[in-house]
Length: 95
Length: 495
Image (cartoon, rainbow over all chains, first blue to last red; front, side):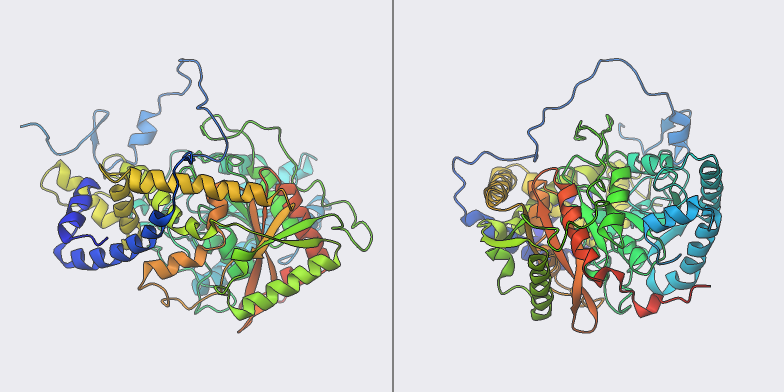
């Protein structure tokens, strides 16, 4: 299967990564190669095989619903690009 | 001191023949002189190292030293280190000073190891050559026009050139074992879940695992023992009793056949035409040496092995696309200087901050998880993953460890494989299945190929058999000297 430029742009939009015009065709070509590799999987009959997400059959460990971490907002926000009054600043979303 | 083993360094420190401060200075001096040609380090923290060394000396004087107290160490730049830059090899985190330590970092600080700096790596651990680093490629100390392997290329090169006696790495598709093979050092990836991933910047969460680099299996065993252990902050961390991975190594070699009874499985799929002739020769010689130590070899089969690469390049990018969605220019890392609106802030910050390979993998991952494609790709890959794990389970009914080449070739030239991502992916052909199955694997030096380039032998074990793997490699190393060879570029007269 070969991806079209439109499909590449749609995926880039989903991934929130700007894809420049100059890069689009080169990206499409390299992704084609990768998908060609991945296509090899499709030949295999996996009916009846259980998918495996994790090597050990683990269940998510649960704990008591009690706060255990200290509030380190100042430490965490010290390295943020743009903050004010304990908030992270971003461009206005709602008109 | 530069070429001393961790055990020898411990003895020298305890006997006061050398101080931790002197060791740190010695290795920092080497880094200053040799790193420019190797680019193994992204950050050197001299002040932090000297403070840690002084504290280690005090601890040793008080008789409270642990096995690694006072010994210099490097961390792959994927591990968060509080107060010290953690770049993950990326422009996205080029300004990131972590407010917390990774669990592995905390463990090694508690052990008294002395961190000298953070090592170079493929960006976000995506790569097999350390050429995908925002900070330039790391170089192979055996031939600086060649790659050291990846993604933990900096850590491997640093240990190979004796810039540090030990270093941490991470291995998602081979990123500890393959650079170990290409640089002539020993590297181990433990069973998935043994080393906590807390503070280890995530690439593919079901595959990532912290690992250890050293000049020998014994050194790796000591480092791994200090890194491993349950951590409640990692939801996939396993609750198991603490293990001393070096426990079998101190026993003297039992007569002429210290590996009598060890059955080594040789998968026919790992000995096919993909292996270079010089790699094959070194691996065959190493297997003969294992037989001479009393081990027997038996042919086994991993019928779904060739599906490991396509399955991995669906699963890992899928998980990466999810993990890397946190990098959006809002809370940390790179933020675009100009943007029209919030969507543009995200799109530009991410386009500017990520390198080409990272972007490609995010796009692949986004596609295979998107509506209409999940079953055909991600679910299919997870089913292949099950088949691959079951292949190993069946093989381990006939053998105790599986052996083969770690890498199909020795180190290639910088720039040689960067035009075609798929060519690069195929260099992981022997290591990737091990991550999919979650099994432990190590690589140790076993000879040289054309051009005096190191060849590594991979040993894969059943779940939680790290000590057996390390013991087998250790007995091989007691009867050979491949692991003692040093690259000329890093040769140094001891003062």
